[in-house]
Amino acid sequence: MNELEAPPKDLTVMPGKVKAIGWLHLVGGLSNIGWGIFWTLYGGIAALGTFGIGLVFCCPVFIVFPVACMELYSAFRILSGARGIKPPKLTSIAELCTLIVCNTFSTIPGILTLLFQQDPEVVAWYAQNNRD
Image (cartoon, rainbow, N blue to C red; front, side, top):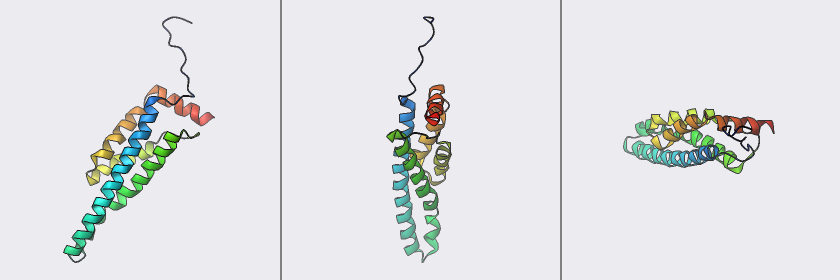
């Protein structure tokens, strides 16, 4: 082995970027739950004050809560070290859609997750994880 060559990496250990993806999804999921509660309360108050017309403001709830469920499920699967998981691209794209409801706390993890998934070490780990 040449001195300039890097030694082969141990793919049984979860890389730091994969752990970061899990933590980013956890933070984004909790953020979306908070935003969902906010929009539910805001829509309820607006509905009471406008005799039901304010229910239009509850529409973001139908975006935020499903994305929160996806993020939390993905975070728990990644952080628990489950076998056979695939890169959470759909979850990352759904996180980007939360920009519609002004939730940048979930949009930023979506961008970072998509960037981290392009790293060769992360791609190799997911490929190894799916083979086992």
